[in-house]
Amino acid sequence: MTTNCIMIQGTGSGVGKSFIAAGFCRILSDRGLRVAPFKAQNMALNSWVTTDGGEIGRAQALQAEAARMDPTTDVNPVLLKTQSDSGCQVIVNGRVHASMTAREYYAYKDTAWEAVTSAYDRLSARHDVIVLEGAGSPAEINLSSVDIVNMSMAQHAQAPVLLVGDIDKGGVFASLYGTLGLLDGSAKLIKGYLINKFRGDLSILEPGLEMISRKTGVPVLGVLPYLGDLGLHEEDGIPRERLGFGLSRDNGVRIAVVRLKSISNFTDFDPFLYEPNVSLYYTGSASEIEQADLVIIPGSKNTVKDLVRLRETGMDEALRRYAESGGPMIGICGGYQMLGKEIRDPHHVESPLESVPGLGLLDTRTRITTPKITRRVRARVLSDPPLVENPPSEVEGYEIHLGITETRSPLFGITHNGESFADGAARGNVWGTYLHGIFDNDTLRQSLINGLLKKKGVLPTESRVNYSRLRDAALDRWADVIREHVDMDQVFRIMGLTS
Image (tube, rainbow, N blue to C red; front, side):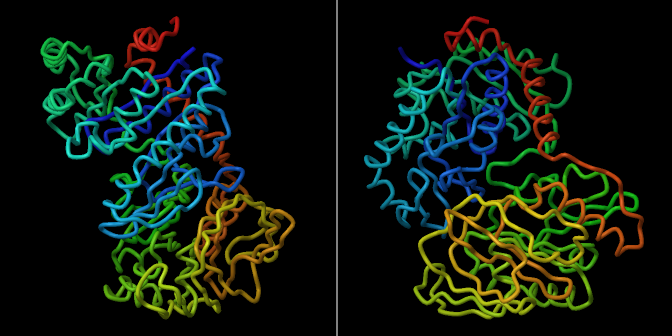
């Protein structure tokens, strides 16, 4: 028997496929079904580590959370991480396979397709329902012969498709109509439209809904409102609501995240969005750095190139001035590497340069090595990070990095599979760590915020934000929005489920 399934495809990138798939996962889980997300091939710099150390797209981790399951690499068997304008790191079944140009990857298609279909078949054997997500647009006709993520996957899974269009971008009806027109025979798999990010009077839109349904024979099953930043993990682009300079709330703190070209895992900082006395913003402006109460240098898919770019733009000097004047600064993963005295890349893993000087704000040195380290860990807090008063004795996080950093006085002690590792370093008001997800730890995050408030002369807050619970509530609210604005009874019938 074929597993019940539904596939969310879009007229292009960034139309909301990932969030809609997550909402469907929560709705189906609420029905008591064993549901799992699936995206055959993801291209993203935000990633997550599974329990067994495999790397998957962060969006699929969020969808798995919505489905109330602990994800395996089967939910995202192929992950592509951009390394240059023409090449990607290719991760298959959670492990780095190779770095490839686009042409090399397309030649690898048959092997990738075998990995994709095997993963889907394993997943479907263990679950009642699968919510599949496409990538970009299924109407990229120049790529149809190498497609392993859109219509080819829908055909393998025998999945009915809902096509999502973003009305906020403009031209939504042309996008829907044009997509169907370019799909030829596979257009018959599309069973309904969803229009996303609508603002205004729905009655004005309704004639267009009727016309697009009449012209294509495909019904519009829902119009979802524009809700702004949902506070949930984005796929691979920083939401525009978080860009630019954010004015601090009354007696609050401003946290500036340096906007690197190859920024990765910026979802590390989502927990701050739920804190009532924090303004979080991403910036590449020296003046906005100066006005922050905390500066964070995030992870990067290409640490060496991003460090060189900071030097070329003069941002390295702005960061040094900020730290040397007493401004608190934290580096996460690639940002941690940048804070040290030197990054050596003797095998040219990231760039043609064998060595580049770091910012010199920590007494550490990094050597880029392979293979990539990917692991979920619990870490003992060995010494208090600057401005973090009364931290917990342990924190949880995950590592995704190339390279080993020498540190004499580590902040954290990690034990993994019987081995011990040192992590993190501090000097003065600056500290860094390889641990992604460290700010998900409520006690550590709130201790840091209180340290920042105290530095400003503001009384510490008694607020106790439970990030996991609030994120789960956000998923519930989003699922409720979908229930209200989408004909879910019709969706269930399309899937072969009783409503």
